[in-house]
Length: 414
Ligand code: ADP
Ligand code: MG
Image 1 (cartoon, rainbow, N blue to C red):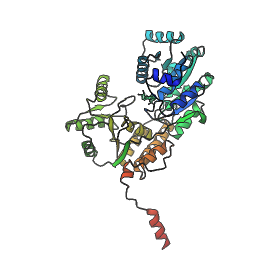
Image 2: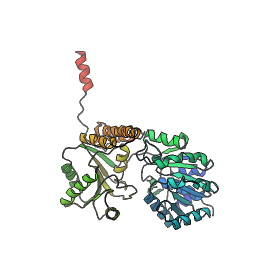
Image 3: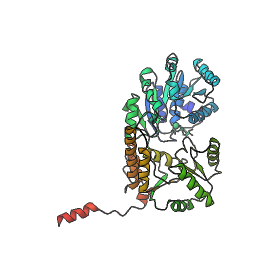
Image 4: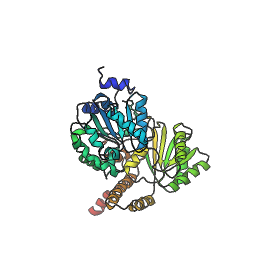
């Protein structure tokens, strides 16, 4: 049966139309060329490789860093009738053998695989004897030391472009400042022609930074303006998360703590209740949120300074996925800069520490800026907005600016 991308989009994925750039990216891959896709979270990156994998001969290989994300995507694909499987350390021997058997029998449209499995001895050789529709590297920022989530097991992926000359290579990420982007391109041997970048602007999110003096009280005041709306409060440490969650509960709010120190069961319970709107507020470390698809999060508060703008953007980006008005509040205290610096300097890799300190400085500059927040944020990702956004604290309440240069000039001229 002949089919074209739009047809597959409707029949298999159940969508009526493409999101921005999806169609162009799919066309490029179908044409046998590479692509680098920089698109915010929720922009629809998965479809960019899933759809062409169905239309091209052979299996689409998808490298993904997180076992839970692989499972979610594979489950969703299977529910739509796509022959998808994953191959990672969560599989028992029998299940792993089964997946490999399906792969060799040409029974898979898509295989999600952990990077260390793909690069393990012999695996690439197996693939070389088969039809490979494309190779997608999801969360491609993990390949770069400049990325905020560097994973050593990603670095070896640099050989893929040369190992599979005729196969389209697709790298996708939602977080890349200018340096990270360049680094991904050079490591994967992609070039500027391969790049597809959509806007990172989230116009419905209102950004506000408050100087932090009595954070608990400031948080309560903010929450009082949000009734029973759903939201996330991020804090830097597990201890702080516990403290804040307790304060909110004591004040009669529906809140719970979430961090990596809690048992799997407890974390699952908090996440499920939040998704089902049974829990209003999750107080969490950055461990919370990856892959959580909840559209009606109305606010995200940073109780402490995030370590970098990538993290801040991702975390605030969990608000307002439904496109309705949402708020991002950052409580900014100078003490937090020292605190973050201390955490960073505990690391043992000096090169990495230097990069992280650089990123921390950029984060602090964002918080201190007296110009439109959105412009600073987008500028960090290499996107240049020309107009003030009208939906951040600086635009809404311009700070009283004291023109020191003007004074200096006057002083000098008399
Ligand atoms: P990303 O990986 O960029 O964060 P996903 O691929 O997970 O985003 O897609 C985010 C959401 O958007 C998913 O729920 C997906 O089903 C939906 N989506 C993707 N493409 C379309 C489309 N063309 N029309 C409608 N919904 C879409
Ligand atoms: Mg994704």
